[in-house]
Length: 121
Image (tube, rainbow, N blue to C red; front, top):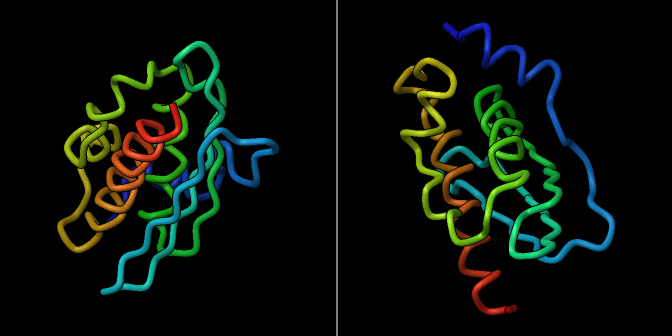
């Protein structure tokens, strides 16, 4: 059911854990399935220099959160809006429809970061 890439990010999540002295933190939840995602970033020179996450959720939510932090690291903050559900799903080759909510959770976190950073700058 899951691609090799999804399983790799689930079993070996990148950038999991707390971030010391973040510039911004967002908490996103999916009220339907109960998954919760916390993403913290540090911004330097209008770029995300570091991103970390904590996630309580299913395989796909954890994998998408892991992939999200890879996409965020080095990204100019003005490009946060480019992180979409489609970008995340294609990063894994595609996600089964019944698990795509994990990509929505991660994409929502990116958009929440954009909004949070817009108000703190």
